[in-house]
Amino acid sequence: MMPPLNHFKRFDVRDLIRRGVEPFPEIHKRVNALKPDEGLIVVAPFLPSPLVEKLAGEGFASKVERGNGADWLVYFWREAD
Image 1 (tube, rainbow, N blue to C red):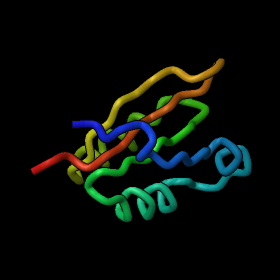
Image 2: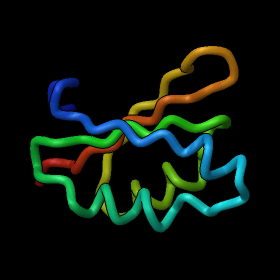
Image 3: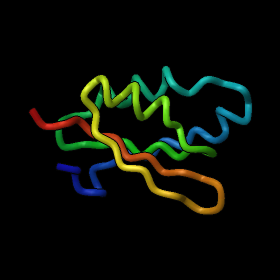
Image 4: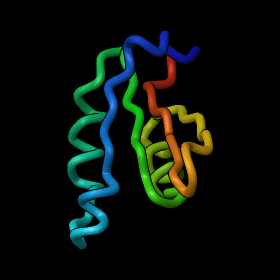
């Protein structure tokens, strides 16, 4: 079950991507630090399908939403056992 929205931290990767920095290591560090009732919202300039698939393989659930304009919001949280 998805945690309450107020338990989500927000991580905007748009500036990192604009600067040519690969955001995955930082995203990975943050999702691995999540407690069972917490989540991470990643704000990206495109739909990060490979990220969603990779984290799904590591036991994270996700929900994808269109943000403002061309942006995407991807919510990640740990799947309950």
